[in-house]
Image (cartoon, rainbow, N blue to C red; front, top):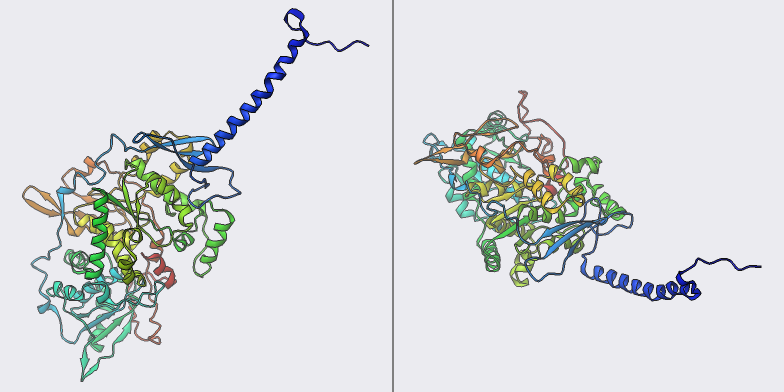
Length: 597
């Protein structure tokens, strides 16, 4: 039987067919060795992968696609960070954008300045204050929510021509802070600075050697001056001492110019933190300045409770869904939300990595120093890893101060928040990853004191960019980020429509320089406000009408007429007249408190 025929080779030498097999064995060995070395090098250079669809909470075994940041070997400034997804890379250069505007200040800021002096029509409190009218308010929520209540309490006392007792702080809320007013704010300064506006006393009035018993009541949210005169004044004339509880957002934004300016005098001048708080904060600022000429402050707001309320999903798999769902059960009034819809509508805070990518796209270099104001971050160091890879110079009050310096404040959440507030206010660029009370107040204060750079992520427009960034070059991604962030960078004359806008944009207290004179920047009332000016500045900065992201704290920005639990059903003055700003809505008190700051 014949042998099977073999493929012929040149010259007919049968042994030639053995040569490829002999060569293949060592070649395969070299290939395997090369593959092993390559895999080892990638594992050593890469930051742990982050799960989709929104990176930042660690890996998920169910995720079919992974993102990660990787640092290329470099000899210095030419290095890059690479964000990869399913093999597609987005390279992040360590240097800034060469075509950038000034990242640290607005070129137009010198055209504007804060102006909160009262007009000649605003009479001295010695003339307006009526005897036997005393107002006591009890604030609610965290530090910054209470701050809004204090500001409005002063204005309410002025409307009622009453003497104000130094406001009582909330010591029983979610924040569990036992601090009183004088342990956070300089009480003597507060009283003396406002003495020509409102008469303020430290303790409730006495009669016959005994403290006068107050009449307890509550007013609706956003109560107008007419609302106060109709609801509160009759009780004040009869009872002489009124105690208003849960005092937050109890005064309308629709006030005349002198009352708005009073708001600004209280918020930006009269409320000064105590010396111990101020001194530690100034030390932290000095230490940041020693590290770098400029620094960014970031209010990250990525705590478990915030994420649970948002109803958003960040790629942490079943573990994340289970943990955040357990937190959500604490609030009976919290309805289930569509996570994808929330992201599309801009209701989800950005992940730390997304904040970092936004800042790098705006042109901030990798060597910029960042101060992060935040509570406990959901996911801990795993969540922060990508932000720290993008900005290695990462600081907090805990890393900048010694244990001895921080010890007196650790048990008091409001005092800790006050330290963060001061450092954020003094930063060269402030980034707010939400529009809670701290973000609003700081935005307004930074506008008032010179329009310092204040960045609000345009989450609604950034979301689709983050979702498709794996298919984009870095230059294309960065260019689109800069485009969608126009109108969100703290420039003068930016549009900030929506509820609560006076905190973020105190237009009545900002004047524009026109030659030798200054004029107040006026605005059209309504939900889509646009400042009116003849300067042409709006055209110069190219601001359009970007969609305004609505975050969680706005859930608490309604109205309610719930009675004080201690009043046994007494004290609510019923006004049958409809009021523009007093829509009644039942809310969860703890939910408001936890989201307020």
